[in-house]
Length: 168
Image 1 (tube, rainbow, N blue to C red):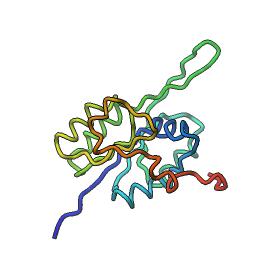
Image 2 (cartoon, rainbow, N blue to C red):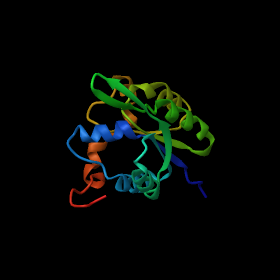
Image 3 (cartoon, one colour):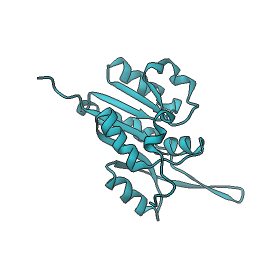
């Protein structure tokens, strides 16, 4: 009997959220988790997200939806009169992908960010790269050479889009 492959997903939440919004729609994170589980047989889905006080309801929703949330402390940066919140999760995503390395057979990376080029290249070399789910039509040219692994999220938009009538 053949052993089932263990598939883990590593998700850059900011890249995912901004990517789908740039296309004029909103992701239903609960439906996206179910999609990953059903389509790609994902056993663990790590969602990397900046932590903001006051968003505890969102974090609870994400965890109840099935995600393992990995929080990054955020910084408030003042630019003129605007205050921007910065919580880059790239290092955490790479680190956790490697911490979990022996526990999965294939990794799905959800991001179109070229900062993950070295991680994607390493996973491919080791035979552990499953898919790269690109959250927007545009993704880094550094990832183009992995085209056989890239799937654009718009292909399954109907399955993972937030129904505007459904309240969260």
